[in-house]
Length: 356
Image 1 (tube, rainbow, N blue to C red):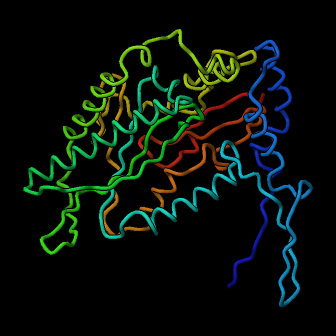
Image 2 (image 1 turned 90 degrees about the vertical axis):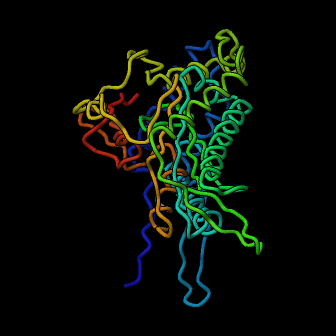
Image 3 (image 1 turned 120 degrees about the horizontal axis):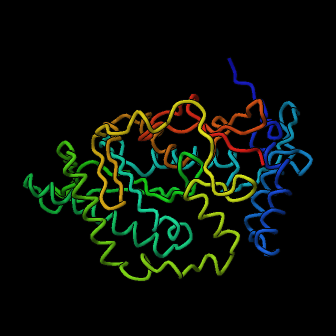
């Protein structure tokens, strides 16, 4: 049976309704808090483009079949990179397919390594691209060294692995949380005497291996960026550029409301405590060192392209999907939290935010 195209209805989504109803109020509140300086234009434009995305009245292309003369109107999309779930979802699918089809080898296992940094660094990483590149460089070097060192213990010299990193700027609770998802070919390639490359899978990973990598990352970063970058609380280039954006970013990193009568408070949790099942429980292949957190339990066996593509989609996903939002009877918006360590969303575990 042939598939039937059903155009999406952008104006009926929960996120669209919230932005349309409260954008003007939100921008006014920001102006009042910052003596009229407000948010930078590029931030406001993202919201306004989102409200026009997929709406026929804001422009469309007319597509006509040359054989049967059937016509369809295709509305323009905003191509936004911030909040639009539709454009973000399309970009996610395209990038994941590209990684699976053209970047990652088909016959080798892949392991995901996820690095999070201390709160004192998260705020800086959110806008300091140079510092972000430094952290990523240190992380990638630590992973490469770990795989090469293990290969040498197996008698393999000159081995090289491969990796690709997605820098995510958000957390599962709709908070600002810049962290690094790196897919690593779980082993090394070694050149044979005849010139061909042969892949040698890595030995099973241990908790101690993960602990050594995160400790190495911490030591190198503290040595490379010691001083003002990490400890100078007075220097804040983002605040100099936009006090409003700096204030909102700080609140979002801490998971706090920035404006309104609930300013300074966190979202209301609906249902059981989302953290309770993992408190005091050992999580395999997970290490924490001085605020640096590293997790490496997600693994895809060689040849499992379907699971690998799902993992790539997880890396490339937009900040907020429509399926995670729900409007409660009292008007608040509930956001389904993600299960620990990249598990599926559990609709019974929600954060409730005021509609404004």
